[in-house]
Length: 460
Image 1 (tube, rainbow, N blue to C red):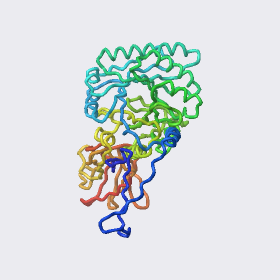
Image 2 (image 1 turned 180 degrees about the vertical axis):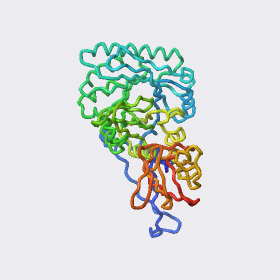
Image 3 (image 1 turned 120 degrees about the vertical axis):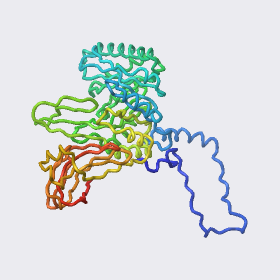
Image 4 (image 1 turned 90 degrees about the vertical axis):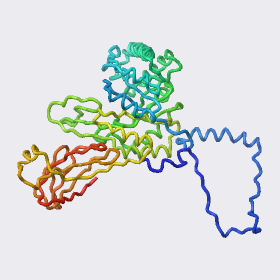
């Protein structure tokens, strides 16, 4: 991603200059023939055609001439450490608005809210406005609608007042509710009531799901909010991965048909660990915060949004933008504390549409004494650690396999790699997806080779 983003394409303008042909006849050595002037279009005909052109433009599912996509970012930390304001300061020049988790309701109980205590000083000092996000967990029965609506609106208005008193510049309020499709009409009624009581200067937005696209109630729901953020990551079976670019493109095109308001798309910057039990049911999901390991036998997988994949997706939607798409919202702001998110240099490169410059290599190094002991060969001069080293400027995807030098006698894998053997010899196979951050290294195994120069073959 990021190659060729300095062209005029970002402005929606294409300049085409045909090559000069030396075979065009010239009337004189000093005069270039001019085409006859075309008669101007009659004013009456022009007035008749303008509405038709406007209609065709409005009905088009994509737009090629529009302003650059703006970029927001979710700050989803429940506990603000010093790393959060540091990341905000390091990224503020590329971000339009911070969308900050402000409160979460407990499952099926809108009267119980857990408010997030942000760094008020950092938010007030930020050069960007904030959009407060209220996360509503769980589903609500029809008989709970009135109470849920009243409790949500009361808490929203109280939060807005509290944040404004703390000196935070509030640009909007976003409701994040994974509403059941059958309950979308009730959700629309909540938004309509909230919009009536909310300060008109504060925009009301919602998080929208692709699973709602087939609902006849979707248009009414989107009309009740000022804007929507379509989430296209982690919405299906986790076994299918965290993000599918093909599905995301289809969802964006379809979503554009349902709203007349500006809308945005939420894209991932993170990885998540998903655990399945013996019956194939999801037993646990660990992402922005650690979770206890599920009990009993289970199978786990690390799902990661690869920077190269996201870069290519952004490039594509900028070239062929769905109608009404106003910007991107990145989930979530990477920090140095967030082990599952991209590094800040990688995120900045993608936001700035710059090339990704990962520099992954495999090296054999003399192990530390305690590792020599663990390998059972403290005196074996041929014992080496197998190290993945990223000397580039952005994160690198972990290779799927590393084939070892055929002259090596024995080996083993660690830290997400296991030893495998086939007709070609030994290799280390990756057991979970992941990224190696810029400037970092990881020990993925050890081997014993008699020679100094050890060859590796990396399979991405």
